[in-house]
Amino acid sequence: MPKTWGGRSYFDYSGSVDNGTEIYFGHGNKATVTAQKYIDLRKHFRCQIVPVGTSRTDPPSDSLGAWLQANVTRVAIASYVAAILVLEGYAERIGKYDIHLVK
Image 1: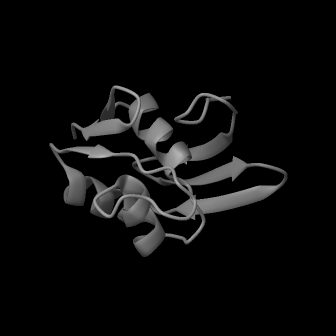
Image 2 (image 1 turned 180 degrees about the horizontal axis):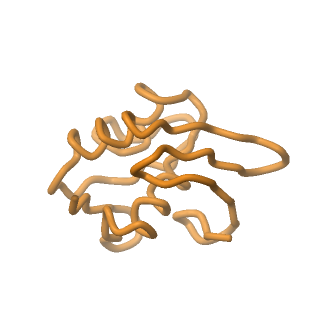
């Protein structure tokens, strides 16, 4: 099971960035990110270094978390999506808070 962006807990997921994912976290919680949403996210942030924005209530406006809350779900899933993007080679971790979308 992969670790969240902050590394303090684990989550699970099925699928892939290319095919869409079902993300399982907490006690029976699930979030869906479609393949099209991953395409949109990657297009929006391609070749940029941006904050991940894991805050549940106030992610920075230019962050991955803010984009996900505005375009996918109000549930804070940036900690999982960022980890998935890095695991699958679509992004690189830059320090503690930032991510670089490479493809």
